[in-house]
Amino acid sequence: MAIDKEMVKRLGILSRLRIPDENMDEMVNELTKIIGWVDQLNDVNTDNIIPMNSVVEDMNLPERVDQVTDGNIRDDVIKNAPDQMDGYFLVPKVVE
Amino acid sequence: MSYIIKGETGDWEIVVGLEVHCEVISKAKLFSGASATFGGEANTQVSFVDAGFPGMLPVINHECVEQAIKTGFGLNATINKKSIFARKNYYYADLPNGYQISQSDHPIVSDGYIDVDLENGETRRIGIERLHLEQDAGKLMHDQHPSKSFVDLNRAGVALMEIVSRPDIRSPEEAGAYLRKLRSIVRYIGSCDGNMDEGSMRCDANVSVRHPGEPFGTRAEIKNVNSIRFVMQAIEYEAKRQVELLEEGGKVVQETRKFDSTTGVTKTMRSKETAVDYRYFYDPDLIPLRLTDELIERLHKEMPELPDAMKKRFIENYGLTAYDADQLIMEKDIATYFEKAAKGHDAKKVANYIMGDLFGALNKLGKSINESPVSPENLGRMVDLINDGTISSRIAKDVFQFMIDEGKTPDEIVNEKGLKQVSDTSAIEKIIDEVIANNPDKVAEFRSGKDKLLGWFVGQTMKASQGKANPAMLNELLRKKLVG
Image (tube, rainbow over all chains, first blue to last red; front, side, top):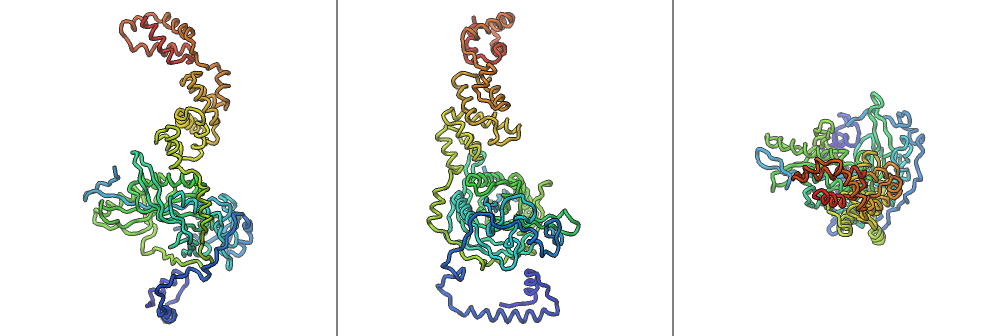
């Protein structure tokens, strides 16, 4: 898989990472190496093997009963927010 | 008759698929123990899981799973014994984790259909591609502060069922009928309250146009329309827009659009270039959800009677027309009221009083059927009084109004107000004689051939009896006396 500057830029946007231009070549280089290493997996023959969806396929998903057992901890929930007012989280204005 | 847009290059057909989000009725959220009830104070119904704190793990609420399965049965669909939760990644302030837990290629329910009835009496089958479980997002308020948005996470993590139709819908009317049917199914099952105006049911519409017989055109998605009427308007507008665009030589671009209900127009929200890349992958925090045969069978047995079956039964057992049955089954509470009122009484007449006088009165009072001042038993009894001749249907109108105003039984009202119908021949004859004696000129006119005056005499005599004369007897006796 070829990694170029365009893709690194896009990955940066998707993962909300600022990648300075001067680091671009280094990023492309490193990601290419990483992908190349992971690419080794393609050498393994996986014909006729059913893909696993989880490493604990034979376990049942734990469930909870429908009861309210949590909440009413507003102060704890918003305590670490960079900005808050009247019990709300505050974020820079976003209008989509 | 199919819905066609007449264009300059020929007829255009519209193709619509709907994605409906239904908020699941449950006490707690899909993956946390915080309350899923609507309307709490901001951020009081939030656990660390919902707020996306590091290290917090989701644990699925079994009730939401059952609700999805039951709804799946209601959609005549396949319940998948294994389904998988996946992360749908996007950044937005209402989504603290940076991803929504949803289901992608292995939904809990797939391949169903519902039949929708159209105004012309036709029935159309609309395919359901899938139903999957996912988390709702939080709520943002943009109008509280000049530079900040307020975030309330009470709704974040509440369970949603996303129900995706196949692109089988061919007109705005069908889209409306589909939504109404879907709403009535989830309400009958009790898996969603179906209130679009409160946001517990929300709809996205995928719209494209084509010349009949051609492959599907490029579609635009209209997001988050919040009433059935608006969905119909949005589809109608969007299809016309696409036809005009195509006929001018333009191209429809695949994009997300927004419907403005005040102008009735759809506008670009996000184009494909800026489209989000959700990078779905199986959520490593959740292993596949496996359903046992016992659970599926138990829920199947517990399924309540659904609108289609109830309609059929109303037609067969009560002799109602398809149209009347439709009116009565639209809401479960109305159907329940009708069955109580019809039990042991003239069901057809009961149905007519419910759809006419009762609906009218409730509308005026702004009350729901459950708050009706007239109990179903009292309505049934009133119909008995009409049928056994105790009151005329004209007097019944008054009795009904008294029942609305005073909430008493029809028997009490008839006795207290002296509304009993007069079916005694000599009493009616006495009144007729008086009317005839007082109007010799009219009698002469009638006898000289002015037949139409009979109606006038009926009116006068009825008035003289204070509306209580048995109309059939009055007519007959009057005619006899007048002819002489």
